[in-house]
Every structure is written in C-alpha cells, then in structure tokens.
Image (cartoon, rainbow, N blue to C red; front, side, top):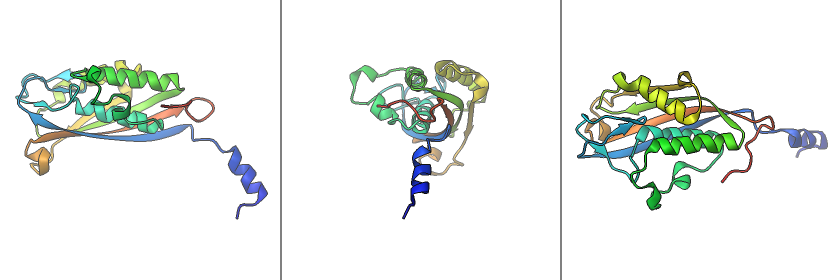
Length: 184
C-alpha cells in the first residue's frame, strides 16, 4: 500500500533525462555487387544483402537503437517493407529521418555505437567514412558515432556467410521535461 506522501512523490517523478536503446538487425546474403554497410558501398564484396530497401544491416540496427532509446516505434513501423516507396531506398535516408523525428520531439543523440558481425567484407578501411556519413545523417559529430566489426569465427549463419548481423547501442538525451513529445 502506498501512503499519501509516497503517492505524491511518485506523481512528481518524470522520465530520466538520458535513455539507452538497443538495436539488432540481420539480412541474408545473396549474389550481387550492391552491398552497403554504414551508408558506404562495398562493390568488391562479391555479394549483397536481401531486403526491401538497400538492406544496410548496420544502419537498420542504428535506427532501431535510436528509436528504442526514445521510446518510439521500431524501424519497421516507420518504414514498412510493405510500402513500395521504400523499395531499394538508401538506408541513410531512414537514419536521416530518424534523426529528424528525434529532434522534432526534443531528443538529442549523445552517441551511437554500432557493431557489424560478418566474416567479410573487412570494413577497417571505410570506418571513418561510415562514421562521417552516419553522423551527417543524424546532425551530430563523427566522434559521437562508433563503428566496429567482428567475425563469428566461422560459426552459425554468419560464419557460413549466409547473412550479416549488426548490433547498435545509443544514448539519447531528452528535452527539459524529461520525456519525449508525443510519438507515433
């Protein structure tokens, strides 16, 4: 049972000013030369990813992390794969829109940390470009975005190169009221 003093105190609490979000995405590999990761083309990868949009697994995980931290619906709600407008769409457009959605609702991105799980391609030579493109899409600085990769040591669907996976974690800061404005 909550007494009157506790009830009054509970009613004055607001959402925390900072929140963490987590995103995960996976796409199957397929023959092709249009692989994009982190908004950057990898034409020599020897494969691409299946998906309605450009299937940029890294950006899809990033969008979900940011939307989740903000308490908003997931990427599939905002950009459904049943909508023909998103067919072959550049996932940097999704990230750009997510950044706009957050800003319009009083949410700022503090940082975004992304990890790709893939046997190939090696991304080290393009990480700086990925970070710049992702940061520009969100309207933040490149040092607020981390991109890294690991293999699956030959294990599972990633190890057999049947698909790629990505994880992302974000920290966002809310407006002065401590909670986002009305969301979708």
